Image 1 (cartoon, one colour):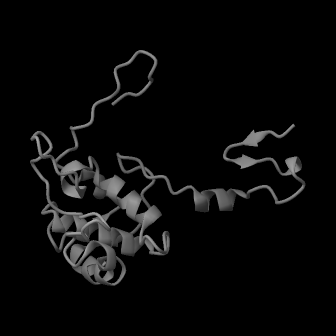
Image 2: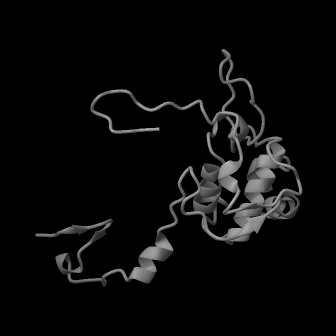
Length: 170
């Protein structure tokens, strides 16, 4: 009988593969929490992120984050619209934490080559996207110590599930 070990199936189940080393598990565990735990050491500014964004992101999201209609989503706009009948869910208006923006970019972008950007590139692109939304200054350096402190407009827009069978807490 196979035994699950974390997200890996024990080697003895199929006679192939090898147990994951602690080094491999650490390399694969790139979890970043809303409060900043898990952020890697690094830094970046929107000014530095502009060129990286242009070469790796603009092909899909356009030069200033306006997106490509019916193809790739816009990254800007919508701030202040969530309580209206015509809410616009974008990075600046909907995402509750800057750390989540960093985590998503690090894991998933660029779309055709995810996880190919270095940590400093991810900080820089995150800073640029937040700058496009008017949330950080172009010269502000974002890093593992201050990214969680960036106050997103919808930070308090998500509430814990109050059902008794759900263990979520804020």
